[in-house]
Length: 348
Image (cartoon, rainbow, N blue to C red; front, side, top):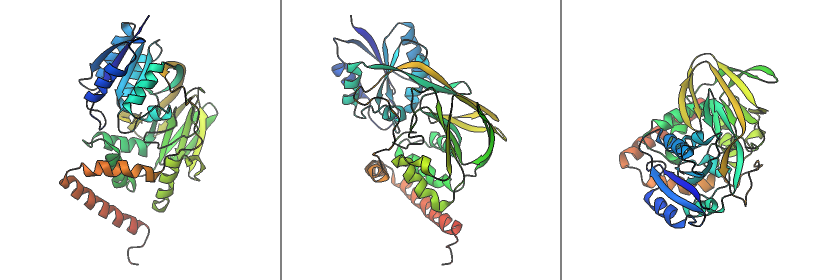
């Protein structure tokens, strides 16, 4: 007896054209295993409704075709159900797909779906909102808000917002409470990771597992501008926990208090929240199709480094309009001047 599979395609996520992926899904999905249907999202939140409808109809697998936002929308409708999540990654970060070692090429991603190996994994919640990779407060949430309002997607936009805003962001005081006690700190960011990375192989918590019932909590303390390149390199080579400004611990739930309301994020989506942020893990609560050749294990190191990201960066750069490039060049020159001034090198 064949299973039912629904592909939910976000036509505007990421930087790839989706019509070709729809054709691949129709032609390459194993017809001996699956009855295939394709649907398209029309607005924010639509993917969740389409996935919930699929659950109600008893569809066995729902495939998110898009980026991390699409994956989150689909996944949140599938938690605590028998319907499995599949992923054809075509966003700008693809954090969950990369953590699960799923192929980035649509053809190979569909091959994994055809193998139909399903694992039951953990997911997290932040103030009741489900997340599958990471959530947090501080600089990463601040950048997510900038990225969401940028009007363009892709690695270049993320890097531009990070460079433009990084030196101006001020660390904040927090109180963190978990099962072991309470601690006060001043932090650049606090990330709660169910999976190992933000996306683009930026490993905020390289040892995180989606099967251990625990969050990997990363507290990054303030650091100066001259240390920023080292922090970036460690983020991409999987050695960030070794940084002297980084503290990590595990917890099944925690409460973060800050002095005022502000932005937080879940899987890269920013949202406004109050002074109290509650984060928790839901153990073994959603089904997902995984790559059977590369089981879900914590990653001690990453093969990705900053040099490997350069081709992606410059391919996106070439597609930008001249006015945008001119503005970015001006911003980078101002950023260079700011760095020189902060390092006290302006008169040397």
